[in-house]
Length: 145
Image (cartoon, rainbow, N blue to C red; front, side, top):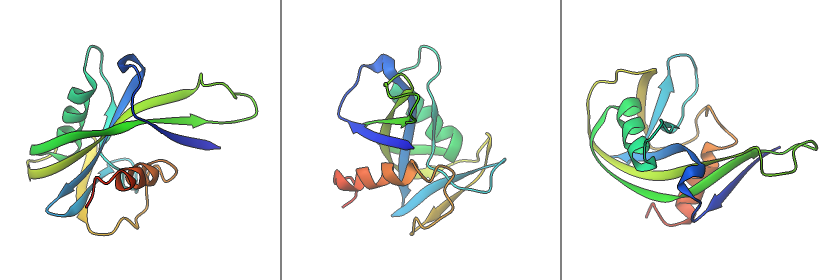
């Protein structure tokens, strides 16, 4: 069973990912990886000696082509695969969730095939047990008015 939890704070050294829920002109911005037939929220792994906010900005630009945007933190999230064999928190991964409003894009030069701007989030998700929960938490916290 996969568990997603939300936290207001964890030590920076625990953060491994940045995920950026994005909108542009009132539409959700989602990515389609070249090797998949599903859609996902932009995001990715932190690189060595990189601050988590820099990870978020870099991933947003790489995966959407965003060049003019505002970005703000929402909260920390964690994902844990819970089985009868790993009841401890050793397999829990932490990431920072952000929201970005994108004002302009440039061409993408990455593993992303394309981006889509949509009104409705009823799509084929790459991570259906995680990403809709991240968006629901952002909504619950009042990020989208």
